Length: 188
Figure 1 (spheres, rainbow, N blue to C red):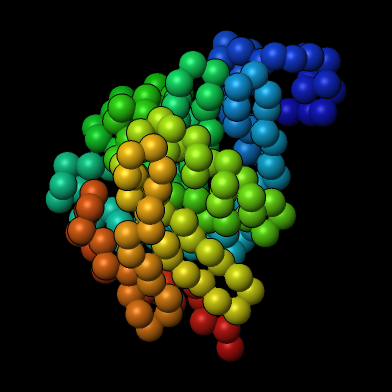
Figure 2: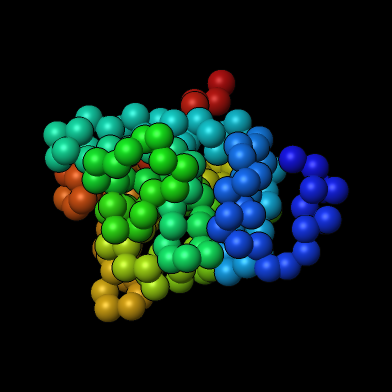
């Protein structure tokens, strides 16, 4: 995708316009008629995402759920973010968009370039859509933390947390214990 393609379009973007873009290397999300475009995540971000998906997958499978990285989730018409990870009920993997009704948990790994998107905007959008669980990964250069939020009414409240050496204990939507230290490569 080129800037010219995006610049020639104008606003607002519809779901049809958005889906017509096809697959791209950029992360392109549709939020209420506008596109939120981010470059591909850093290698560290991708490593954390892959390792977290690997840690969640066995217990998700036991619960008849699936773990996906970077999928289109339709929160409502015209609102399609791409969470870093999602735990979902069984879906058709050929469909380009997953309906929010199938989503049990979303996870965002905070991007250093724009942390407010993950900590505020997306958290608010996911809560408004009624997703029961939100996992936020705070990955700083020398530390990493997992913060699990549970939907209470129309907002998320922190339910559990983990830092290196003090694992995150999850019981919903899957039962798993994850030490954040296991998500990053040791430096040496």
